Figure 1 (tube, one colour):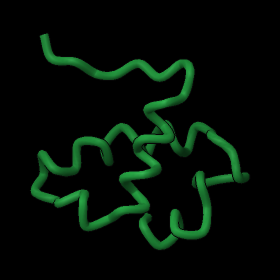
Figure 2 (cartoon, helix red, strand yellow):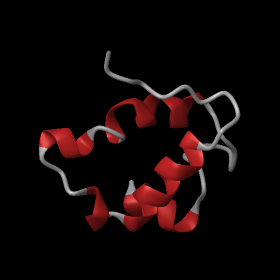
Figure 3 (cartoon, helix red, strand yellow):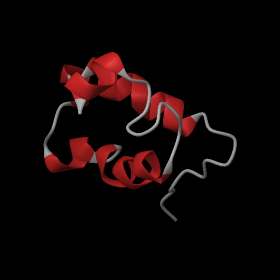
Length: 62
């Protein structure tokens, strides 16, 4: 992912698509699984781009 995002802002078609939405679902929680996201700066920038989309709805704990 990080290598791909070093060359592209999004995963498909150089625009925000369902692919980004689907990959975001698990990737944003990768640290819960023991991955250090700061080791992947391009992924971190992409996560911020996805989260800044107008219709983005964050998942919150209740």
